[in-house]
Image (cartoon, rainbow, N blue to C red):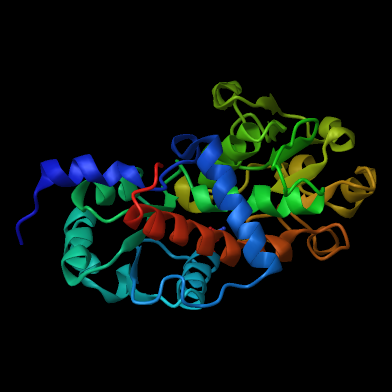
Length: 320
Ligand code: CP
């Protein structure tokens, strides 16, 4: 297969969704408004009829994979679903070669998840179809960041303008190793919220302030001042299989005691997958102030809006 790399490189960045920062405020709000609309009025089902979406998941997933599949199908698109375990990726084929192969078969967009940092960008540089990151090593998980701001904005009644000024979000746990945290910090900050990342020094070192957020190693000091408390899983697969550091639960888990110290209006969030009894207890995950199921519901709508933006926006030649 012949690939015109120069042409593809020039075309690829146009409608990609690789990070929230690259997306920018205007496009972020446009996608969020469309997603919010889908939650209130489901799509007709022919918005992407005749189009195909390739799913290239080089790493396991439940929510992202299933919701992208549901999103594409509910818009009338076909899904070409490649999993690393059932494809030639397991024989050592590179991300770029796999992306080129899927492009040659023919797709209108690719959704790429990789354990390897930069994987979705590598795919984007190799093909001319737009690429949506579905998780990029420790770096970024932009649609998850969109989901998190959408669920929160709807709850606080700010889903018209998506202006979150005056609200404070605490993101708690293994922030250093979390792509979700990076994208959530970018998304909440871009919409005007103040963000604090919280964890033990190994998970929330001072250098994370470079993301444009506050950094705290004292969860109990943050409980009374946040409007949303988003808990994160310890990313054991990203630090050599070592689990949570000693004393982690005592210092950083959302227990029933800590739940009782939150303001009545504060919501509990978690992007999943959750480890109950480690970073979050059942009372918090399943309680009345939990937005966790709502985050999953927002996932399908957000991914529908992202696919439409990427595919129809590209065909209409719309500005990114
Ligand atoms: N939040 C998230 O990315 O979940 P999955 O790993 O199940 O896709």
